[in-house]
Image 1 (cartoon, one colour):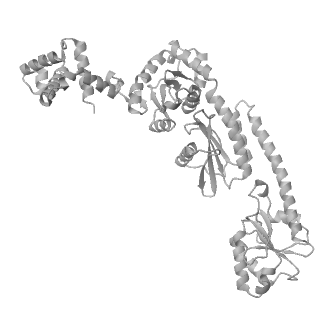
Image 2 (cartoon, one colour):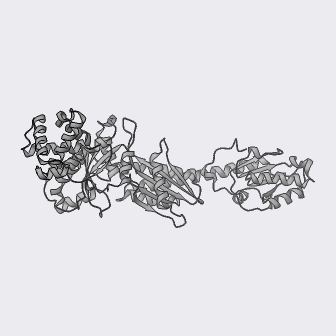
Image 3 (cartoon, helix red, strand yellow):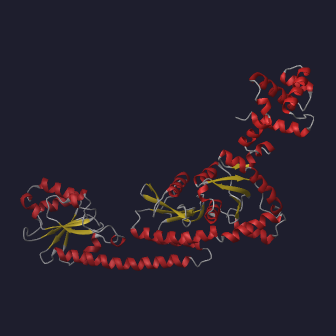
Amino acid sequence: MGHFAPQLQPTWESITLARFLRQLPPAIELVHDAGDRPVRWVEPSDMDDPTDYLMADELILTSGFPFLEHVEDQEWIDRFIAKLVQAQASALGFGLEPYFASIPETVRVACQRHGLSLLQIPTSVPFAAIGIAFAKLMEADGAAQLRSNAEANRALMRCISQPDPEQQLVATLSQRLKGSVRLTDASGQTRFSTTIASIAALDTAAEAQLVREAFQTTGPQPFALHHHDAQVHLAFPIRAAFSPSGQSPLLGALCVGFSRTPSAFDHHLITTALGLLEVLVRERVASSATSSQLATSLLFHSHTALDSLTLNHLTESIGSNTNQAVRVIVISPLSAAHATETNFHLAHVHALFDTRLAMRRDDHFIALTRTEPTPDSFERLKANGYLAAFSTPAQLESQLGEKLGELLAQASGLLPQMLEKQQCLDAASIPRTFTSLLPTQAGKQLAEEELAQILELPKARRDLYLEVLHGWLDANGSWDQASKNINLHRNSVRRHIATIAEILGKDLNQAQVRHDLYLALKFLTVS
């Protein structure tokens, strides 16, 4: 029975009881029609209770033997038929002879009462003939399915030669699956989509969660699944080629929605589309690593206004959203294990930031992008193994070429602080001061070296000298103002400042010395 039947295949899904009856000899009579149902297997059984061995949608054939001792026991027969219905049997085929000349009335009543289709099979039709008819129907459907698969695959392959292959693939896949299809980038933003009116779209939060789950899946055929009412939504990650380290950069996701349970044919078609999309997306985001780096390097070193042709090429190279400003970013891998895998990182940077303009510099990467520095994008970058420092935004116009050096300096200036804090940074949200550009730990270490002789003094004297020095520098060297700042007589301030200068061995009359000490005190107070 179900334990010995082949696993469900798409070739069987179109075989229903009504269709199967049309293939059988007309001598077989439909005694009770409880509605058309799928038939996935035909199984003879004369067991008193075969339900433990049934799978859904089986046509059960019986010689009537189980009913011999219970033919007048309506309650027993009702229980027998009810169990078949509970096991989701498609129908019961009752064979005449050698036990019964006609179907017992108790069996007919039970099938009507519980909604199970009942067939009367004459002695002229062996059970084996019914099984053979079912096998032939499966074989015919299998051949038709293979032809359909081949045509569907050819339709998908033809999309590759179109001017907009990804968009054509999405549209063709949707048509063949009769489902909604959406292609996203590595940030989960929709690139192309085709919807079906009968399939309700997921709300924004559920859709984003489905894509995040797909990005986190692993294995040879990973996907995320979401059931919504009677609908099924799937999301498949699209990845670049595996790197020597075994990790694979995310390039996007393919999301498919059905108003039914997807079949094996659907899965086969999605797998084909995923393979084609991976090739297309890799070409789009990776292009040539060498030419990409060369173009990026020339752009950052030009320092001149961009002509209209260059501006158009630049626009096409940094994403599809033309309404967003552009930023220069500096990207650092979190793991040193892949530091030498330039092509691996460039493919990932291209995908994560939807840009073709990226290059390697020392142990980090530089790129031009429209990606906005948000908490979500920071979280996504870190989840993918990267930290990034963003410059302030700039409009995509001819003068951008003259500003790129300044934007790069902004982002590069945040690199030490980003690495120290191990978090992504946005120049627009950080005050533009020299202090803000220095990494905290390095600045504090330098401050301790600068003020070492003071810090080595006993606590009471150390704290007094630090307070006096800070108050005097904060007052820009004014004795009266410093006296007010720290509530100490001006003569005492003078005397302490002279002592501090002697201890430090520095000339406090020099502006550079005072500036260095002021910065040192600032970092010394940072926890």
